Image 1 (cartoon, helix red, strand yellow):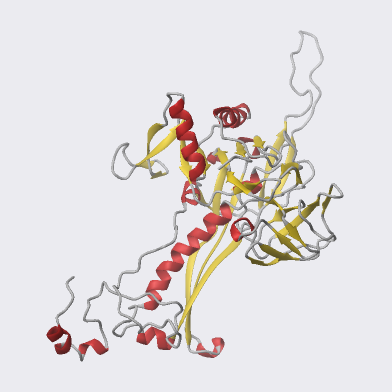
Image 2 (image 1 turned 180 degrees about the vertical axis):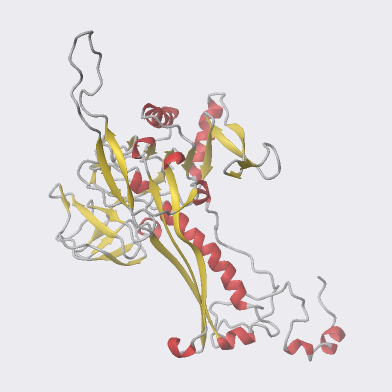
Length: 446
């Protein structure tokens, strides 16, 4: 749209008190939704279009099937066939010993994820004037929806264990920036591995994260002064259980020392390789970086198939995606392309229609690069490349107890301020019904 002439502007000056002469597609972005600030809404009139300077992709969250929660607080898993209950029997031989299956229970309750926003009543009014942002509540509602789903995607891809670069009795420091520390959320229950004593530290009282600021995590008393080389790991999540929690193993090598993450309140001891509550394959390299190889990827796929699963998706960071592409090209092999049909139940799109997605594949398995994929930390406290997850999504689901709800509040007395507040919340949890058919590759170079 061309800029209005001076005569057009003057002729419409009265209308400009309540609406913009520049048209409905122009707005100015403001720092916070009050007008009495140095960066208020009247500094300059910009284009009304607000562009995102943020990555709002949520590929991993979109790849996991959604289901209704149902009338359940968990589920049971059959982990043993029974000893000697099946064998050949001769014509007059005795019958096999009567035995029963071993049934384990997994506890799982829904988690609540919330996103808030607000604006003063003054900013709601003045944002409609010339030089304002337009409907500030509608703008932030839209942005909050993007942030809400992004938060769930980041929780789904949160790393479960990291080596510390320092700390105290009540703080843990991971590296020098907020990238890895952000994998732990307020309310998470954590435990530690003391590298100097070569022992896990699990106090009787819950050690709960109270704040995360930059690279520093503040939590309850660890029972020991945490130092460089120790490890922090998640026992229970305040938010959605992550894929990294699911594929963790007891005593896995993080930065060259042990860590014992948990999920769904499973007993930490016993999540060793091959146990019923451990992943098909969790490949580490003791905190030493290595390049992604086809052998590592093939081993993860083979372990899943050996355990009776079939990989449905491979999730990795963009760094590993390009490494895999170069790796295949150098061997004169290429990523395949496969038509992906979208559907619910028996209703699906036709292959090749514009509603389908064309995905890169390896051995027929779709590859989804996601920027939120967690990275490993080496023994020198430096971030390595992103992990690779090979998943059988037939046994993974995001169970929704309450779909995303929007609540708006204009009770000025309750807020004790003239503000309008908005809230988005979702009650859900990521559930894994078979750990044996999920795999992870860590300690990879970027």
